Every structure is written in C-alpha cells, then in structure tokens.
Length: 135
Image (cartoon, rainbow, N blue to C red; front, side):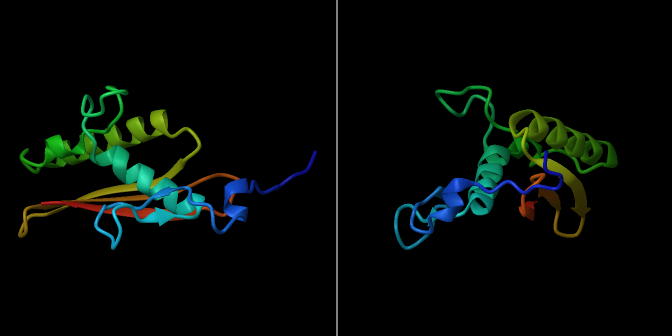
C-alpha cells in the first residue's frame, strides 16, 4: 500500500483530447473546449452554481439556484445561509471536491454579493478558486 500517492486523470495525459467546454460561452467559436480536468471541473462548478433547480430538462434536481438571491435583501443572516447552502449542495453533487473555504461578502455601495470558493481535489494537484459576483 502506497502512502501519499497522487491520482492522475488519464484524460489529462492526452493534450489534444478535450474534456469539456469553457464558460461563459463567448469565445471565438461556438464552444471553446478545455483540455484539463482542472478547467473542466471549474466550468462544471460555474454551471452548477448558476443553474436553477428545474431548469435542466433531463435532471430537474441539478443546480444550486444562486440566482434566486439576486433580489433579496443583503443581510448577515442571508449571507450565512447562502454560504451553508453552497457548501451543502456542492458537497452533495461533487463528492470528489473538498471545499477548503467559502467566503460570501457584501459590497453595499455597489449592491453586490461576492462568492469566493476555494476548493481542491484530494490526492491530486488540483487546487483552485472560483469567484462569482452577483449584482
């Protein structure tokens, strides 16, 4: 039994094989492919967080539904609930991801909520963060 072994995603070994598509969909082509598991995972998280439950036809339970908080009153209780809600939903849907830190902050002057998620995948070299601004 090896200790401290690292998992390598086989698709990352082939630099010409696309893993997924980058978000947002505004590249030079219709779909801008990504070629690493790290980028595909980040795109999948963005897709999950910005999708409302019931919006996906084949999978009605998919989505975190963060857009429903856009027009709610900014209050400490709402921000705490939002952080816990993100943690529960991402942990349930993406079991391979370890959420290292979730920071939900308010910017009253610009009426914006900023969500920063630091995450990693255990036993790999994947460590990344994601920042979403809701205005």
